[in-house]
Length: 150
Image (spheres, rainbow, N blue to C red):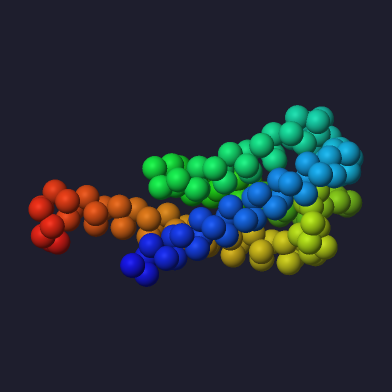
């Protein structure tokens, strides 16, 4: 039961994070495009990323809502958060000036705070994946043995 609660909290946290992030980017779309364009690593892809990042965040949120797609959503969330974290490390280490293209309250974080924030969410999704797969394997085992837990 505790495992399910932790997995549900992780899913809800990611849904909240990604929906919030996607909506703030889309609501201030022009600013988001400009900020992406100011990044030396993303300039050529700014227009494409301005639509695709919020779209992917919303898609992952949808995957996390449903039990049948939740594990796929967790893996997708892990992948996207890993990309964001890698970008933060590269941008903060190798670029002189890179504006944060995040929206809302997240844009007020320093690069160090943002990195810690992302690492916490990465840890959360890893824990969720481990607990989800452990819980799923436990259900399969108990189902296959007619309720007898091995």
